[in-house]
Structure formats: structure tokens, C-alpha cells
Image (cartoon, rainbow over all chains, first blue to last red; front, side, top):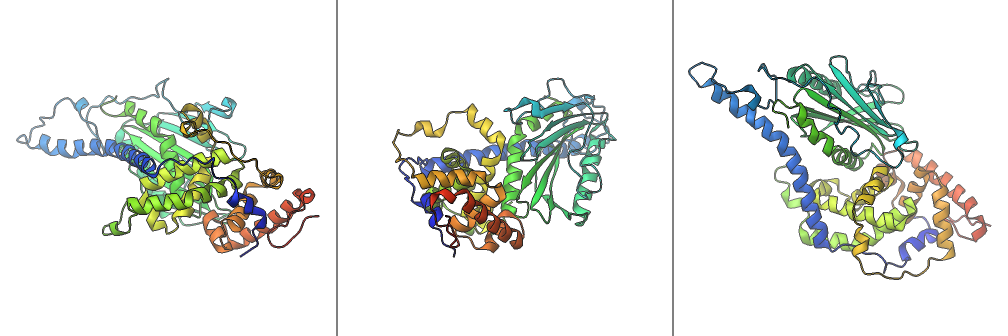
Amino acid sequence: MPENDLFESFTTMDQTHLHPLPASEVRRRGDRLRRRNTALAVAGGTVAAMTAIGVPVALSQDGTDARPDPGLYATDGPSTDAVAWRVDVPEDFPLTDGFPLEDPDRTQVLPEYQPQAVGPCATSPAWDVSGALESLQAVYTDPSQGGMDRVVSVYEDDTTAAAALEELRTQAETCRPQGQPRVSAEVLTSDLGEQSVVFVNGYDDTGEGFLHQAVRVGNAVLYSTSYFQGAGDPAVVEAEQEREQDRSAEVVAQMCVFAADPC
Amino acid sequence: MAVPGDESRTMDEVEFDDFYTTSYARVVGQVYAMIGSRDEAEECVQEAFVRAWAHRRSLDRAGHPEAWVRTTAYRLAVSRWRRVARGRRPADRALASPTTAAAPSEAHVALVAALKQLPEAQRRALVLHHLADLPVHEVARETGVPEGTVKARLSRGRAALAALLADHQTTLPGGATSA
């Protein structure tokens, strides 16, 4: 072990001013955080359950389509119902919610998508907006941390949006480390919205990485990327995933405006 | 997701409380050395422990719970959105009884100032190796870079620190002595 004389002051510093919360309070807050995260996941799962239950019931009516107003259905997968999908991004959509507010000049809202990161295979832009009817992007540039960006893309219907997300998942799952520096992709477990894909692009020789989070609700996809360091450590990756989930919680919640049964 | 049958490895309340009590101040000191602000370090470490309890199953599987908390606190500290969020809610510190801390030594103040001038990666490597007592391979694991990179950062960091502390007659880690 190295000599640590120099850093001894950090271990012997006066600790009487430290005010740790009681352990029971830490656990209480942890339980509350866990419940909140679970509620976010359940919100997506409930929508899926509605579809799974609703379709068999509808088909049990002597072969006739006895389904009520399609507007009562929130769909989780391909939909052929005559849903009046929203085809634009509302003006008050909170795309920048959770972005740093210290320096507003570092946040830009762009009507055209300008890729801020490469995609899972490091051969194309992070998100392909070519099939979308409309996309709106917000970019935060941090001179020291690399920043983050979000783009919300609205599609003709939920089937088209779901296909775009599945294409992304396929890319992330099948890519092999490539490029210089070598970029690898790892798909993480996620359960956001009606459908989601989360993966990390890690730069093998530097420990840098981008977290990609894509969430679909109805006919829209919210795609977020954020830069971070320590991508070789699973604990760091998990922490970054949680950070992005926390940071985007409000805007993901507002994606309900694109649901078949919008909020 | 938890692995079926893995529940026996999940930290229970007593174990967590013991872990929290024994490691809180140590991790605060380490994160303080990394970021240069004791108050912010304490706040981020506190939040990291909250997350640790919320995700205690994955915390157990990580095998290094203190490293998990330290890394989480560090990432919280360096993210600017965290600072904004802090301004939106009452600080936990405000609930505590006011106390008077002893003034830090001149050498400590100089060290904090010198550390702040180092590149982030060098500072983190120095703290993990010399303050958290992690061997090079564990520093590499925690920071997600090759061991060679860690050694280079330590070497450069020590040299830079020696130069920055040249006026303070301080013995540096590894035996170097500043003039």
C-alpha cells in the first residue's frame, strides 16, 4: 500500500459537523424511491395488460367485432384500430424538463434532428428520424461533461413507431465492437412507457460512454442520449441509467399525450 | 431484476444500517477529496445511500457495496442537474443542529485547493488509490479504464500535486517530498 500521509487529513477531519440522516430515514426514502420507480414501470405494464385482456374479450362475441369505441383502448403493439393519432408535438411538451438550468444558453431546441451521438453500431446517427412525421429535439451542451440530448419523434401510428424502436433494439443486440476507438453496445433491462430500449455505447479504451434511452408511448418515441464516464463499470452504468430515468421521468410521463387514449 | 432464489443475499435492515453507520463518514471524506466540497459530498453520499437501499439486490450482486455508493455519489456530484435540483428543495443539512466545526489545517486547505486544480481523472485516481486504499486493478475496475491508464494518471497526478504543493513542505504519497 502506498503512503497516505498527505490524504490523512481527509480521514481525520473533524466529523462532528457531519449530519447523516438516521438509517431508518435513509431506508424510508429508499423505499419511497423504489415505490416511485415501480409505479413508473407499472404505468407501462397496465397499458399492456389492457390490450392483452381487451382483444380476447372483443373476439368472443360470436365472431363479430363488438369492440367499443377504439378510443377507449390504449395499445401496446401493432394497432389497426381507427385511432386518431396525434401527428405533431404539442407546443407545451416539456422536452427540456430535467435539463440543467444554470446556463439557459447551453440548451437549444431544434426543429430538425441533429445527431449528438452515434448509434449502437457506431456507423450511423443515434436515432433515425426518416420515418417520422415530425421530430423535435432539445440539446444541452456541457463543456466538461459532454451534455445530453432528447428527440421526440411522432409517427403515423403506433405500429410504425413500434417498428422503429424494434429496429433500434435489433441493431443494439446484434452489433459487435467496432471502430476506432472500439465502440461496443450493451442492451440493458428497461420497462418504461409502452415499449422501451435502453443501451450503452462504451468506448473501450477511454471508459467513456453514451447512455441511450428510447421510450415509446402510442405513436411517438422519446429518444435520449447522455454522455458519462466509467462505462466499463456495471455499477456506473446502472447509476447512469437511473439518473437518466429520473431526469426524464416527467417528460416520459407527458408522453401520454401520444397514447391511443391520450391524457 | 432479482435472480430467483437470490433473496438470501439481499442486505437486510440490520446489515444495511451497519454498513451505513460504518462507511458514511469514510465515503464522505473520499468524495470530498474528489470534488472539493464537503457539503456537496455529504449531500451526494446521503442520496447514494438512499439509492443503495432502494436497489439493494443489485448492490449485493455488485460485490463492492461501498464502491457502489462511492461511485454513485461521485456521479451525482459531477452532474450539473443535481446542483439545480438541490436548489429546488430544502437542504437536509438545514434540519440538523447547528454545530461549529474546527477550522481545517493550512495543509488541508492547500491540499483541497491543489486537488481541485488537477484533471478530474487524475484526482479521482489519486483519491481511490491513496485515500480509499484501492490497489491499481480495483481503481481500474471502478473507473472503467485499463490499469495502464490508472498508473499513468497516478504518476502524472502525483507529479502535478508535488508541484502544486511545493510551498507547503508536504510529504507526498509514494515518498516524494516537495521542497
